[in-house]
Image (cartoon, rainbow, N blue to C red; front, side, top):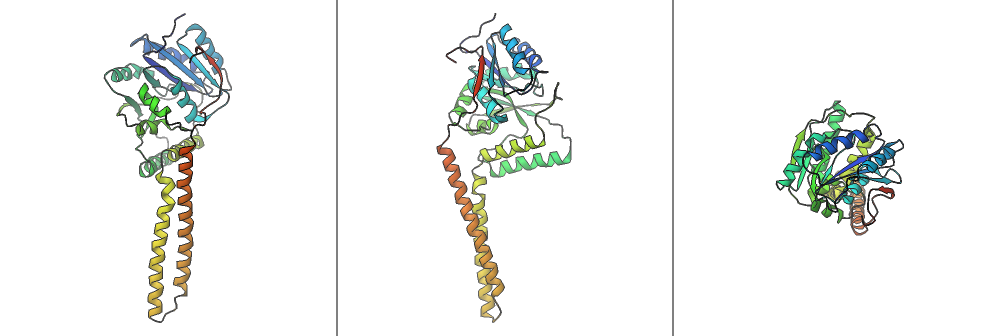
Length: 315
């Protein structure tokens, strides 16, 4: 049985959920591509509470090759927390994240490794995504637009999470102690230079995608929430607008009174605007406080593990 070094050159992290039809195939494909560039690597599967035979299949792979490792979560912890936990457990000097369903092409692994060896800290895969409907395209465009407008750091459109990261970048993200890390955004927040590689995203090899409309919507909203302080401050902007409207309305009421006209509707409008202004002011201050509380109370575990395979007691 092949043994794994204490600090491999490359770690490959493969998040999976109900991937019994793809688990062995993706492992073999990754082994072939890694074998063409290095023999100093590990492959970590992190199973996010699969209900099929995914964990059993990967266990059998672990028995055949000690370079393949497995983490099994006690339940599904979501598509942000589980992959991030897998990245944090990797020991490689560079870490590759890749999907189990072949929508991230393993054939690009040698190119990713080469660019990292040439000095790139982060290389993200950017997919030429096939758009199946105008509604999906519009929602996708709206999501990226909101992230650009309100996000604290720019999000790279169509980055899938597939790519290679120097271990120091992953370590920097881990030190942030985010309870639900949006890794693609946090990579930008670290300040390390990011390069991209464009690829055409193939169809899923087998099985059914877990990313339906509502799961993608949830992911987009979570990404926006976790990458934006500006969004929490948005009610303050509405408050200032409402207060400015109050001033204009009061001036209108004064003008009406000065010319002997009834100012009742003006005053009613001013009171209504004042109420909205105070409400948005309260919500804005509350949002900022919530963000401060979140910043001060980080430390929630990303996942709870049920089992580890091919890890040493020191890992």
